[in-house]
Picture 1 (cartoon, rainbow, N blue to C red):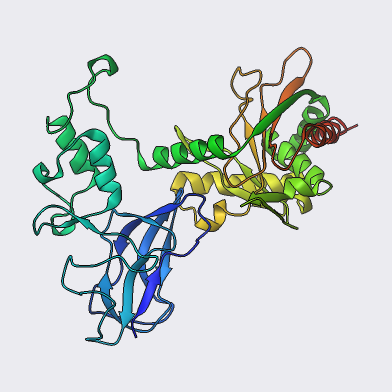
Picture 2 (picture 1 turned 90 degrees about the vertical axis):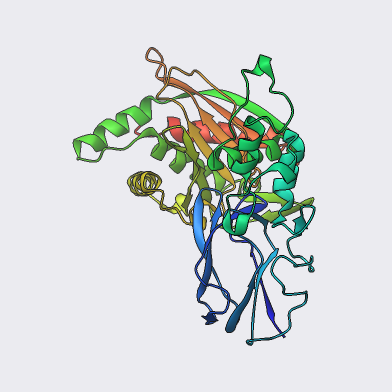
Length: 370
């Protein structure tokens, strides 16, 4: 019996992944563990490996398609083996957990639900759209071009005409923050933290030839405090709490206006200099855009520092798969203090525990270099 190839949970924090390209064509021999296709997750790419040996009998998604995790995207089996659906091109039916293939009127290429939803939202008649994707499939860009070409609702003049679609990365961020704001009842607390000790320690380390940024100190102190607060090493999924032993912290890193939140693992066991070395590696990876899904997985707390700008304080959005975020503003020149804002998921962490965590973090930073 043919083996269904599904999109696994590959550490991404969004519900869908994007198929970049197939690495095997239909009819090619496939070995177990051999890459079948390349998938794009939230800010990373990875290969989907085959869980079976045989022949790639059928591809159920085209490059550029957005696919739910857990969906069937291919079948591997013996040559000429009968599939669970009519194997004629474009005649796939929905299988258990598989992607739904919805067609246009007539015998044209099939249209994925996400494309049909976009067309409905934009008021575009898909029968009037010429597909430029593989096999004449209609892409997201085709729908927006049709909308701009007048095959949809009249443009909103007050909004400045026809807008352009969000970039893939912006779309991921938009979905994540929307999901977080929808699911998480959040409370935020802030405190002024004397950074004088950190500044003195930075100067001492710089004299030793070690240039260390403030992020490394903030992450190191946050990690040490998380060791004593189990809820800050936990996540809430379907009203259940999952505590993790390892301390994993995400850090906000920008590349131009693109935002990435890769993780530092085992941060409570690293020195400040070791944290800085890891941050340097992550920044270089952001520049080359060579992240893997593992670079984003497992964090329960994020650190976001805007201290390089004249921002006194701010409240950041907690990532949907995490429990808290620490937001840091600019160090004031007169007092050498910075405002730290802690936002937490109130389903698990109440105001008192958040206050105790922020107090402990303040103490950890202020006691440096004394």
